[in-house]
Image (cartoon, rainbow, N blue to C red; front, top):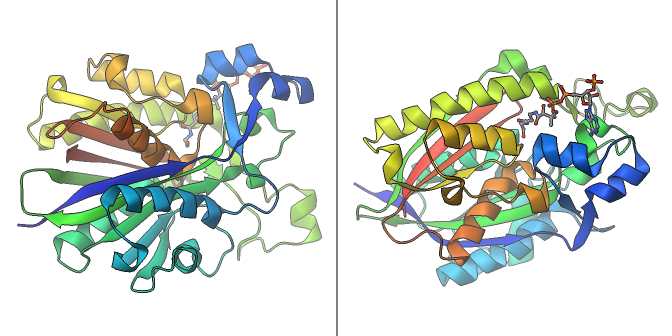
Length: 326
Ligand code: UT7
């Protein structure tokens, strides 16, 4: 029985930093409020002309190098994103051109902040069935272009970045043990970007109403996220007969430190075994998990044979998890 295994990771964040005190000078917020309520201290944003596929490209080069592969070795490219270069073609296709990965198929997956987990689950199926041998999966977002920088309820939260992984088949015990995907479309309006699509095509009216910006019912989302993620991590471990004490590392989506801490508490997991980077990057949506994964791999914080649990929650509403034996 084939499994898929992550054989290389890479990440990239833009150079430009916006810290909380800068935002405190521009709008009615403060470093104290943002840090206490979210754990975020600063975020990265793209420069003029830099697009999602540029971030994907930088992260992908590093992941390919780590896996010891060339772009032409890749047979499938999946980009998880909600902020692609343009509605069509897919950002994966643009990335394919930039990499020169001429032997790959390419498509995007959109499950908002759960996008990387959804992409990982799709990738895992392609590898397990033997349909793909060398798959490049990227989670990348340029959230900064879709924020109302005068709306303190959203603009302080999000950031830009990309993380990439290479997946290959393996017959051993290591690899992705299971993935779990969930969605509740009844709550689609908790987090959305209502303008610019076929329902509300771009017009003077949609622009004036700010419909091209991310809207979020933050507090309502927070409550569902905490409840749902607590259940999700417990059921994921139980299904694999893994006790929380055996978990080497939890790599959560980086939306709010209070949500992350609540999930860790539910598993009795010390924060030293939880990957946290939202203080530096804010919420980078589908990029948050692969960036954090790349950091813990490069820091040597996860080792061969370790159990690693990934989990995410986001617009849709969507949520999902993956358990990996590293
Ligand atoms: O990644 C996708 C999934 N997303 C999430 O999981 C996000 C979940 N939600 C959250 O992380 C939190 O709900 C937020 C960080 C968005 C908000 O924190 P909260 O503790 O739920 O605050 P709140 O929305 O209940 O607002 C409390 C107060 C309000 O003022 P009043 O009505 O009490 O006077 C807000 O207007 O804080 C105010 N507020 C702010 N004040 C200063 C909201 N945003 C800000 C701000 N600076 N940036």
